[in-house]
Image (cartoon, rainbow, N blue to C red; front, side, top):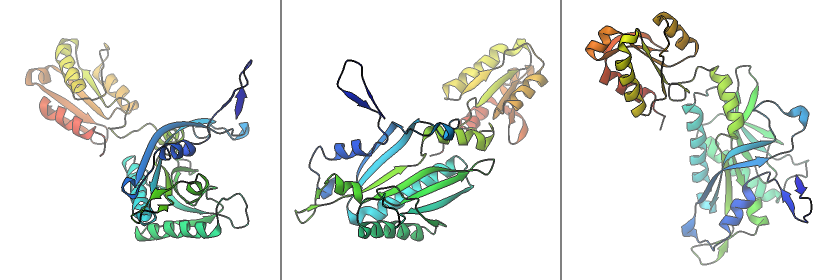
Length: 324
């Protein structure tokens, strides 16, 4: 999509993909085999003019941000790098507790002329993907016509709470664009060789991923992902100073915490936190203030009783930490 500025002969274009820009970065300086794999990553906003009838919430939009990366490799590095990239996507899905997904191996449709490159290059790229998926003992389906115009791909198709399917992460092998842009690197023999590109986006797009993630958990996020990870609930105003101390110490540990200062009964405060699916409730009464402890309630485990403050702080910090 382009727009000409009034009073100017310059046309401004909205980029539909990040690939050409990463290719130009690769091509700014000569490369040798020692520079490969050459990895470029970007949270890049792109635009696609989707038909208005196909737009839907956060899952299909005209402007979105991809966790995009392009990896330039020598032929002998391709399958090893491809395996590492697939493992990264699997790690992302596992960390976010997506278990209901399938792996789709998208190939070209020989009867469609939209694909670039020779049949020989396509056969090689498809063989590379098949080798890696087989080596990793992954269940996958092969589907003709699901490839990108420049190469075959591995799509991770997730089912949401309504059993609708959405493509999220994707990994693609590309022999075509390096040839079109005449990319090269100097090999061990001192001669120029053509690199191969891997396109990868573990999330696909942040907008779609977050939209499906919210539906997937129905708001019941794991502790590390919850907008509010802990809430301190004082039983009476008298213990507010101690409750504020607990709140401050949680804050210092990087916990997303709130302090419920409302003049309400403790049962009402607990019920509110449960409805809002807060993972940790730290209840503070007179006894807890005297003992320097808290009464801990955990969303998935219920009431755990009175626990020393230091032990509680460490437990919440550990369980609320991001997976690594």
